[in-house]
Length: 329
Image: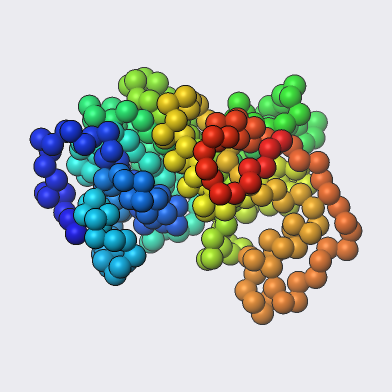
């Protein structure tokens, strides 16, 4: 299996239309996107922040999880999002980039500094994309937290919170940065600032970009310390607490990349947590077995009105075989 950048013939441009880069390929989403792209016949440049993650990935894909014909289409790169030149190397010859920011293993929590790091990374990546002549489209993975915070006045004292005439939060909305700073919602702040930086640079440099604003990603290691969950009670009561299964999120990424009509931002979710039953189910997933076994269903059978829409994504995905039912509102 090719595992080094120097095995790639930069003169071979005939296959650029089927050569894409995935960054960061180490996370749940990134690795799943790599696997799906290989199954769909793409040659994949899998980019990793550190060498340990890259070695683990090589062992995984060298262990029979991908057949030999597909493993030959996988090329691994070390590409630090804070190192512009390493990103340029990983992108050479690619027609597309799937970009998601994974928190560094030595700095796993979100705070104001993480936001600054994520913005710098987005800036580096988009600059590198602008310098890659073969690149046709960037799929930028953002978050629903870059959409839902501060989009409606919660009380008369929050003068910085924008209000809208439409009742649903959708892809037209942006999280209010001042609101996030006030309530220390660092995940929403980071995702909003990074996505805004990416959009500004994409428009300035003429890079074709779409963004996926995903809900809480459901995966086996999900726990109560997940940064997305800061303010979960408020999201729940406001009808904007959404989650997404990994397969559906990957399907959405494939669809917006391959569909030439895709544009702008897409809110992505296939679960809504807006009832006591939903909240109890999620709590049992987040808590360790010893604690979740003691979790009781909330006494009041409350159902909050849903106030977030994924209608735009659903419309795009109607002709795409997801294997999952799309929830539309």
